[in-house]
Amino acid sequence: MYPDLITHAVDLHTDLVRNIKGIRVSQDLFDDLSAHPGDHAVALAAELATRIPSDAPLLSRAFDYGAALTYPFINFNGHRTRFSDGLGYGVWYGSLELETTVYETVHHWREFLAASFAGERREIVSERRVLRTRCDAILIDLRSKYRREKRLLDRRDYRFTQALGGYLKQQYQNGLMTRSARCEGINAALFTARVLSPARDMCFLTYRTDPGEDLVRVERTPGRKWLEIIPSSLR
Image (cartoon, rainbow, N blue to C red; front, side, top):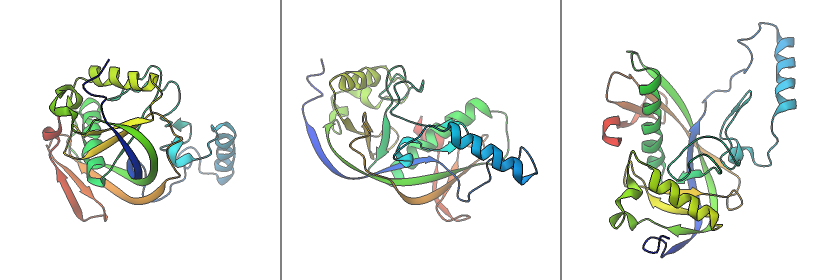
């Protein structure tokens, strides 16, 4: 079905970097519901009793605040991504480089802000947690295939890549490696959790932006600029 694309594989044994929503300082999840510590304890017990168990929460729950769960490998999560239409399977995304994860997540964050806070003229802050996860897998290697097939890096239309992802999933492939559509870095898209080892913390990041300005400031150390990204260059 894709004879010109599926021609090479890579035997990958290295860390992948995953950049998720997180917080630098732990917070009480229920302190805004009641001022009484006993109420907090009851709410926490109820949350623990209904939480979906996981052997590797840093892999299966990208973040877990109350009832909000992110679990890429469930059969249905309704979230469309580059290599999944969101109807039958999820995809776990990681990158070879930290910077690549920043360009990817800054783009999606600004798209969310444009849809939700278009009229705002103030600084909005997002805190991120970055993890390293070992991957041991044979993956379909698409890193150079964008020269032949431009739709692999289409920044808006994911129909071709979603169909390709569905085909590889049906063929029981572990996943694929491809160039990022937002920068020159490399991404991995994985269809199974079994090729991943437990995650380890790498660093925390802070994103700062005004929705009315074409600029995102990224900090590794709070208050100190690390990167500045122009969101319009990622669309």
